[in-house]
Length: 503
Image (cartoon, rainbow, N blue to C red):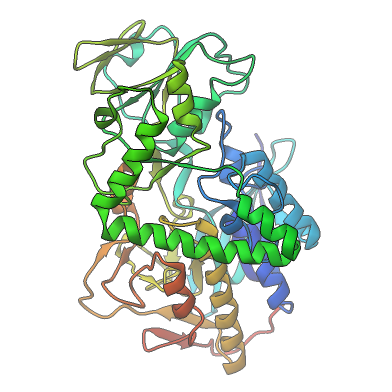
């Protein structure tokens, strides 16, 4: 692969990093509301979609309803409220096309470094641009603002523990994040290690159609809460029929925002009631006499970790049919024919799927340098959930963990627009949050999930109260992010000689 260096430096007002659901949403909002700003979306991969393009494992789908996971400005019209990845990706492409944003996205443009100069009031991004023939050119792009829509996990590496005896296993071991194209599991015995959303999705998906596996076992160390949810939202269909596409979608979105919030509050405030309700549904869907308490009775309360969804109860259906099973035990080692458990049982397998989670990483791990000094983002505090203390003119798109991701991103984009308009009106070109001395710190993610606990040491902090506490409620953020754009914690500035917006 050839590598070249470009001497040309491009100047832009706003650079969005990432062409997933957050980046495409941001590009739409900014192009509409900030028409005088030059804008580009840099995507390191060869296609849009982010998560929905990267993951190719069987059954990949949303774990949130698309009436809230979708954009407020573009109705979700497919009858499936819980949607497969290809439908979500089509929706994103439609968004780009309908808003004439296709030319704003530059593929195979990977941002590998960012340096801020207070004197110049600009970011200089180092970008590796790879052509179709494999030639990589290193470019410099200068920008007034960076909006990082890069997600929160490593795209090039999933989390996979080192299991003893892995080299002895004679079959295939695969991680869902790196699913090989054309993997044939027809008639095979499959063991999926893990019980998160990925595993709950894959179990029924690998048992569908003519290429179905012979049997799929989900092996978990501890149980997970699994709730059934209709794949088709009949109320949404009725509202759309009565009110039309746009108003019906808006009404459905409003309904689901409040319904989701009520469910989270109920489960967190009354965990015993929530546990009983989920267990009752599990018992109803599983075979008579099934050991529900062994396999579906977690040691933690609902929403201490994210709930998993089974659309139309498909996960329970395959257990009831006998084509899938759940094993709750600890792994001793891999053997040549399967997995030996602490109980002494050996699970036979032709294919082992390590659905063991993600590796957390912000901004693709790129170094961020402010005035010649590399910033340790783990020492920064999140301001209003989207700016970082000590890092000027840098916004990040991080969605909700207890609700649809995109709900928070839409509010962030509106705040970002208001902030830039305020700065333009007052002649500022720099904004940076300044955390109070001695501010109490807490992990930025409010979950006890394994990936959240592992990733805490790589992520910024949050404080105990607004604006330094990261809200996980749309209702709370709607007030905080639609209010005044500044307070005593946000410092503004301007360069000595203001340059034109475009150079």
